Every structure is written in structure tokens, then in C-alpha cells.
Length: 152
Image 1 (spheres, rainbow, N blue to C red):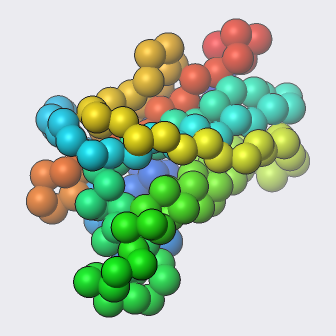
Image 2: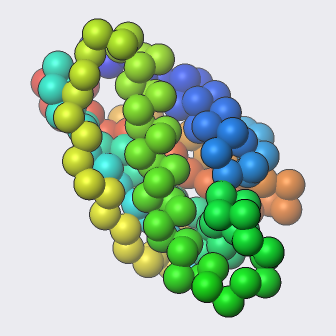
Image 3: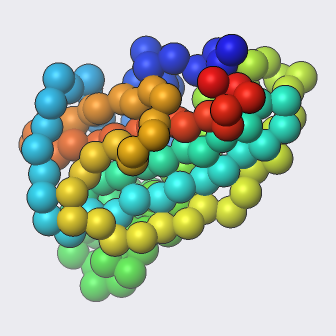
């Protein structure tokens, strides 16, 4: 049985993104977004195995990259950093989430993040728990975890 719940995922995602990228996110019942977005997935394995998925509008990630890198929001290099920003946020979030859910003694192996452009911000099919958050402008941010069947 997994120690990662929807509420733990939501709380941890909001906390980590506020600390790392100055993204202030609140829980949302629903949020619609269709357009240029990015999904990053990050696998973990060990005593507990699965995959973390993060999905957000690219424009939100450009702002996060500016804050993370200390660059002005109009810096022309930022659009190229959007996926890298989400990858880094996935790494940090997964480490914190796994420690909160399973304790420091569990040391899962964390893979390399994989990003892709998507047209809709949603949780991936097969997610066991998901957190839908939104920023002050109403843009959605989705975090989801899918467990290996032995952890479900």
C-alpha cells in the first residue's frame, strides 16, 4: 500500500514549487487549459516504484525558469529553459514526496526526467493519485503519481 495520497501530493507540490520556483499554487476543483504545455515524467524504483508526472502551461514554466535562474521575465533565453525548469522541479518534488511518504530510510532510485510538449494540461491515464493546482491567474498545474502494480 502506498503512503502517497492525493492530499500529500497536493500539499507537497504546492510547498516545493513555492520554495523552488516562487510558484504560488492553490488547490483547484477544475481548471481548463488547452495550448502549449509541457509534461515531465520521472520514474522511481525500489521498495516503492512508480512514476511522477508533472504538467503545466509552458508560459507558467517560463516564469518559473526566470525566478529559478534570477533572470528578468523578458530574457530571450527563457523559452528554451521551460522544460529544464519542470525537470528540475520534478527531481526536487519527487525526493521530498518520497521522504514524506516513506521516510528517509527508503532510498529509491530516481530515473532521468523525460519531457514532451502536450496540448492539454491533464493527469496522465492510469494515475493512481493526482493533484490539480492553479496559480493566481487560474493556470493549472497537475502532479500525478502512478504506482507499479505491486505498490498499488
